[in-house]
Image (cartoon, rainbow over all chains, first blue to last red; front, side, top):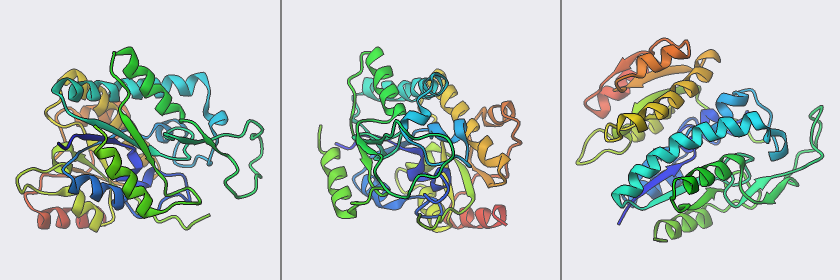
Length: 181
Length: 113
């Protein structure tokens, strides 16, 4: 039975990406189409970086964003999203989370990490910062749900910004996620 | 770095129009065709105490686009949206409640200049 997919903001609005990161003008359709074709309700989560560091933000690793102020910001958003998840869980709906792999905020299984990064942004282009783990917002939403006694939903992240991105694999992972409960 | 393909146009859309039932207007499909992004407004089936912080978040996100000159529009909207935007210093963007995909296309064309 279809459920409710809480998706990263940028799936429906690529305008929220850091400069250089938007893959299309607005709606990133591949996974959105997959979810909708299967009858899942979409719920867009706010982009935690957009309102905090703005549209002109640099690409960042987790250590650069992991401040007390940013954690408070993420907890405020997480509380709002968890309230909606709570509604659906109480209704008996299946709930999944779809984040962004490689993101310092929205990564589910892959985030970005480099403890040495800081100062003048002269780092070479590449993907050496990709690291196993979750982003800051994902950590906070799981913590908020746990505080409410709600089990963390099954989750995945879209992988379009990873060097080994394979659209077919990404779709297969989403189909697996939708059938996980 | 890849070429950035953003459209610089963002619509604040009633949640129901992004999850249509029974042949209703599918706003998301039209937004995609017309190169607009979406900020989803909380659906009417959420209790007020759940919808209020979600609406506040939507307004805060809209503020960042507004102050950077992105084109904004509202599709159907939601009670309390104008007040939420005002708390962030954002005037209510052009608003419409289209009944069909054609009406939505026409509205977006006008709003997007």
